[in-house]
Image (cartoon, rainbow, N blue to C red; front, side, top):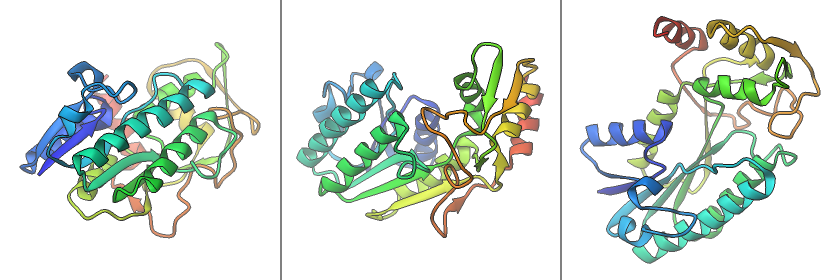
Length: 252
């Protein structure tokens, strides 16, 4: 079975490609570097020829409101049209827990637009919404920073190790389309401000973290329900934050 992973050279994509190949699957890692560009449509017909499953992990290079919406709408339409022409039988996309609950975020509005395109395409699909990755917490801290102080809301989050997201995706790739939106999250709920303090401390980053209930996360204020699973039965990753943090420190 041929599987095409759009964004196959990124953090999640490269790991997913490796796991699927270990399971004996024929996998094409597609990205602009390999001549496949969902934003322009370049290389899509050739890449999707003979494919049964497409995994869309592409992300916008800009999170500015207009640019990110243009990316997900344009890339989504191009990819889905090429899949319909190629006879793809399963479209699997990675999205974000909270996408439907945080319309003040330009990024999440764009992800919602992407999800709606998928549902309207007529192609059998699975959408997997994930919570925030452990590995991206340093980048998230930068988004809260004014250069000296990092203002972080105390909202609950349920972050996850990227390997656990990959494991969930691999199982979904090899299964039947759910024609539904599923969720995956880490095994524990943590306060966002305390999580950022722990990550910065682990990285020997001396910037001060200030708790601020009004601090905005990619354009939106958060509450305790914003970034945790909303479904009754999300898939739960095995790796706890403390375990990942300890391993990360040992590699520094």
